[in-house]
Length: 134
Ligand SMILES: O=C(CO)COP(=O)(O)O
Image (cartoon, rainbow, N blue to C red; front, side, top):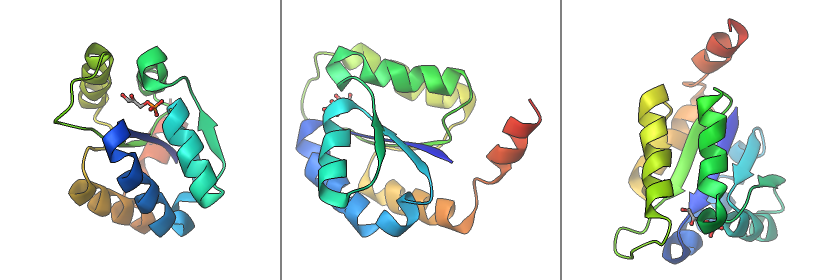
């Protein structure tokens, strides 16, 4: 699976802890991230993460492009609901594309716990079949 990891600044510590806790699952997959989030995760976990631009510089849109091309399978995007983001339109666009293509998107820790367990269990394996049939 191709999995994206993104967190706004005040949520980065949470996502890093999450990545550390579930490293054995994440290391079975291809990981992508916005710039700063990816760096933090690589430093904390040693996981190999493909880093896009930082979010405000277009990183969310790069992940969105993967969704549009049907090459992204799940997204963990820990958003900060209490801080205005300069690139709010990009954030909205990313969430919208997840809805357009029915890509699982966890925007908080509660949903993230469910999604990572589902990924571990193979609940997203249907995506492999869909992609193979294209
Ligand atoms: O702003 C972001 C997502 O909208 C995250 O970007 P960074 O990981 O580069 O901080």
